[in-house]
Image 1 (spheres, rainbow, N blue to C red):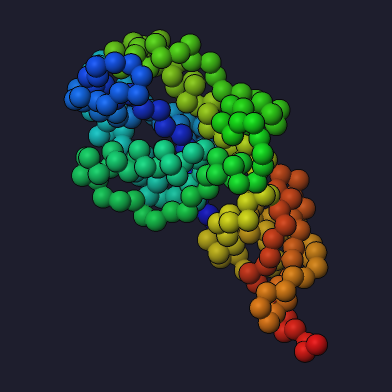
Image 2: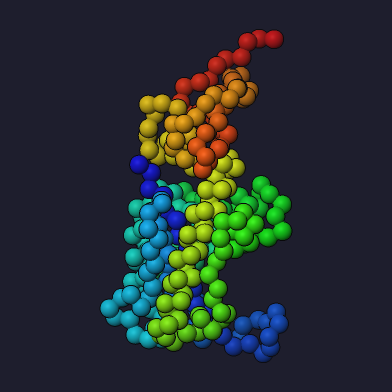
Length: 253
């Protein structure tokens, strides 16, 4: 079966010197960004959170995220599909930077589903932020943080801040999964789950893997007709083309 990983990371800010507050060039970095924690789930499994303070050698105020990065690498290395909101622009690039910094080799190749890109390309929402999509679709909302003081508290090693940060991080993945399931039927470029699973015994939805599909006409492509399918899974409803058998030649004229 395809291994689908939902994940979200929280990072500490860069710390540096500037001469002012608005649109400033950084004179010098005192400390660059690092990972504080990440939340994840395999498919619809339990959402778990791993933070810097979960490791035995953690010291309050430490910015050494090597073990945290290594533990996330093991998850990504195992995944076939990775799902994140703004994952392509932020989470995955930020994680890869930490791998590079610590000399950790690249994980095995995985396919990425970015719910932010789907929202931007398919709909004209007033905001495509995860919290706003959750509210708009009546799926829930992110946990309140109380502001930047929460990040400062974690960076200082405050236990209450760590507890609140992990709760916040966990809810992001809970909401991410709900938003993903609401949007996935619109994802024309969704990774083909059938190809990953290699379940080619019958017609299946290439998005969710369900065999609860019906034929829904044909569409021409070049000199062939492609069979169109409709997924009847209530959590998907994708319109898609099979990768199995149907490719009928067009008649002349």
